[in-house]
Length: 481
Image (tube, rainbow, N blue to C red; front, side, top):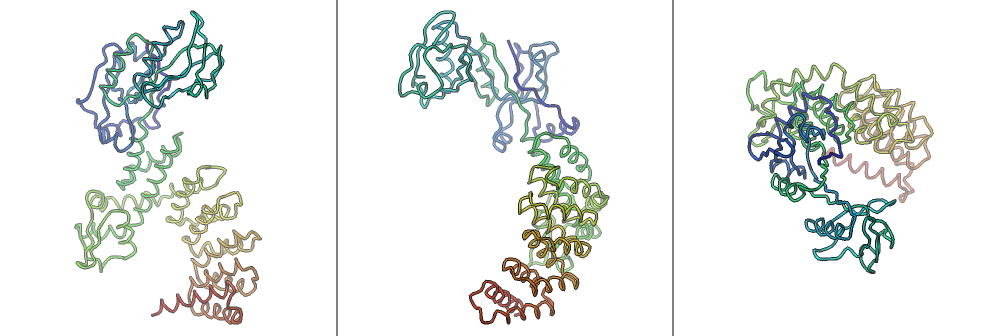
């Protein structure tokens, strides 16, 4: 008799998931087995998948209509990870036989006592005793508990009724599957199944690497509709990577126009070169003065960069990211962080108010608030007025982040506001932030303002602000050498 205790959740995009199985699993004719008794065909996972994702089991390839597997609602693509046998206990013989069979495989069993939660008993080594005996026929009860054993420390009492013993067996291969079902052929078995989540994660990550506009819609669909955090996190990370790739369009446009995979570095923008190297798209040889696209992603991306750039800049991803940066909309901080990074790269002016709301939110974690400030800094001059208003708030954290963002933007308005705040402030923590922000700007009025502050603290060599100002000027002097 066959049952299944965990249903395979339906894919969010069936065509997409089928393609993933074809691409990554590469299901073929090897390592397959047709189970005549259950009327289904299963496939063993290849070693690469198991090693990379710590995944084990056999995959259901197909089931015969109206066969036992089909009636148990096993579906193509499910991973059978455990075969579970139930041993009803109606006599002392049932109990002893069930214990022996369950412990024979892995020194582990699950005990079901009437009106109690299931108890897992795992022995340290083969041959150890479970620590209690039973009596009775029809109704089997705990007779005696041996002190110093697992049973003595568990929720087991003399007189408890033993209902059944459950034997869970992990499946690693086709051979495990066949051997286990053979041993349990007379028992009611249950399959514990799951999705190949690791495969989907790998595929979601691969879609981000490809730099292809066709990846955007499936990734957005998975991000918005998947109940699995790991898939949502992977999809937004891949969307972030696609955004990062899109801003390299000018660089890859040069390779495309020249129709080559190698160009001299002195004709390329250094910052974009560094970003492309970090993303694994090319290698830079300073001695040879060459930038070489790496196969396959780099060489393929020079043909895709323009289309991706245009698609990303249609605004869909900026709107998506803006929607999910609020903690009351998206509880997972890693996803909010990725969305903030996307906004920092795309720099949409329409996101300023939403970013300010994150920056000012006291319920948000400091790191996320700081990243909202960083995104505003990347947007630049259009965000200055909103940041100045935020700086006027009483909350110290808001002041700190807004000041740092203004320093990152620079410009006359941001600089003058920061200098004015420094000359009026008496709070040491805010003073340090303002000094750092003004030093980032680093133009002549900024240096003069910092020098005036240092003069004020000339006699107070032990103050934190004086020590920090000295460090700032030492750094500026070294930078000018």
